Amino acid sequence: MLKIIKNNPKKIFNLFVWLLILAILFLFNFNHYLSADEGVTLNGAWSLYQGLHIYRDFFAFIPPASFYFILCFWKIFGPSFLVAKLVSIFTIFLGAIGIYKISQKISSSKYLMLVPFLFIAIMSGSWAAINHNTFNLVAMIWALFFTIKSLDHKNRLDIIWAGLLGGLSLLFLQQKGAALLGAITLSFIIFYWQGKNKIYLQNLLKFCVTAIIPISILLLWPVKTILYDLFIFPFIGYKNANQYPLDILIVATSIWLLLLLFFAVKKERSKNIWLLIIVQLFLLATSYALPDIAHVSQIMFPASILLFVVIERTLTKSKNNQLKLLLITLIITSLLSLTILSLAFYNKFSLDSFIYKNELIEKIKAYCPNKYLYVGPFLPNLYFETGKIMATPYDTLISTQFTDQQFNEAKNFMIKNQPSCAVLVYPSYLERFHHNPNNPVEFYIRDNYQKIWDNNGAVIYKY
Image (cartoon, rainbow, N blue to C red):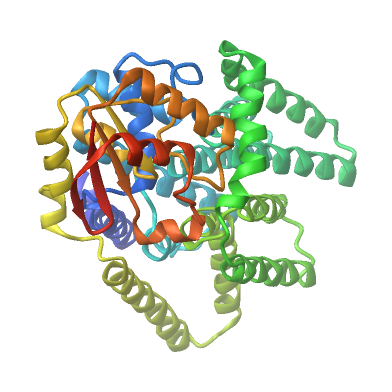
């Protein structure tokens, strides 16, 4: 095998890029910060590991798949941050492979390896690896791959796999999973309308039926609970808590419009390309609720593939080989430079942060003997990191997102469980949520608990 690779420059190049992609993923995620975004997934899995029941013992406004995904590996290897981080990194790597497989269905260029490299190098700097968004992303990528593969009508199982993975993506994140299912459904309807070929309707039926199979797992819980927790609550409260400027989303949408214009002018006939365009539009719509760089960049994988196609076709028309080589060199150099700049900007690579020592965690372990702990408004990592159990059903309580009824319910659980400590943390990023500390829970803490430690916006109160 090594001899075959040695005599094949293309395979050597591909192997180099795959190793580089894996190295970049480890560099971007070689850390152990108290990331609240990672904390949501960690605490959900930790609560399940402690025997609590989701949607009954504790509240969650995202579907259960990410919690159970991490839980499965913890059951095998034991609950640890390292296990969760490694599983997440290799899951994202699997997503990069999926992007490459999709690209192979769109183009036969020898530089296809640049597509997953582009995606990982530029866009992963702000990601939270242990997160429902990244798991949802990988499920969507592979669902889209099998959908595209099904368009050649060679393997009847392709559309089955597409449906199963599409349904699974919704179990990781409801709005993006639903957007993907909607985009694929619309695409098949358009393809049928264009050629009146009944196979598209047949495949659409198979896709919808198989997608329902994983989604039906949600019926294990009361329908009323699922409807409120996963649909009504996020719709009402999520946008209120995430007041974020639309500039990044506007840039991303502009890129989509330029791609649409390019392929429309060229009178593109490839169904694969039009499927990517439709999917990208639907995914962009899901970013309106929280259009920050992390959430927008993750859903731009169809555009990254289409952008490569545009560049490739532009270069193919040029007869100047030296110009082609110069442009390719510039692209690769730019990607490497952007990767280095992204690492520097987000400051993610830190050996000190991976060999983890945190004064706040050490103080909680030293001063808080009770198994229960309250942490608010938004740092759910602390339950997992300290080995404590939530004193209330809520791992986060943000005033602009949660209702007065939920705050009062949390207060009653505080009175019932009497956690030995309550921790209030007000990091700088909390400002964009416009959280109001004058709420029933924090009033109760300040009235009944004594402040014993205060450092850089983190306060420990003891009962």
